[in-house]
Image (cartoon, rainbow, N blue to C red):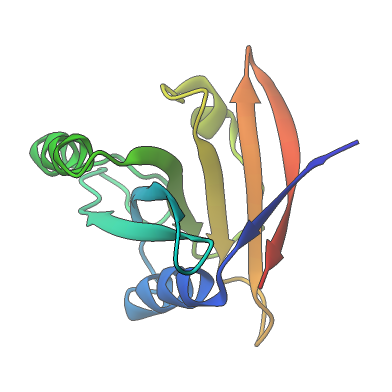
Length: 142
């Protein structure tokens, strides 16, 4: 049985907008979250877009190291937790590639893939990568 994770519609819209701004390039970045906010009983998410420096940005992503380090510093300073690593697939399904799986360094983080290969339909999927295995997550956008 798949794990289910609920993400706010505002977060899903932000990721989709970032992907649509550069539809021919894989976008990438980190998402952090705070714990529960007492007044709203909701979690606060922050998106950290990071430049893709891969040689072929249309089918691979590689985060710019300094920006990635700065994002992690900001997450730590704000006492947040790494929630997810996201990237887009401009021309393919929102399914992890062998490279995505092999180069995953943060096993506790959700991996969100946004596909732009669909016409007018949001294709955003979540995964955990563990020991060369892929665990599909049911993402519910609320």
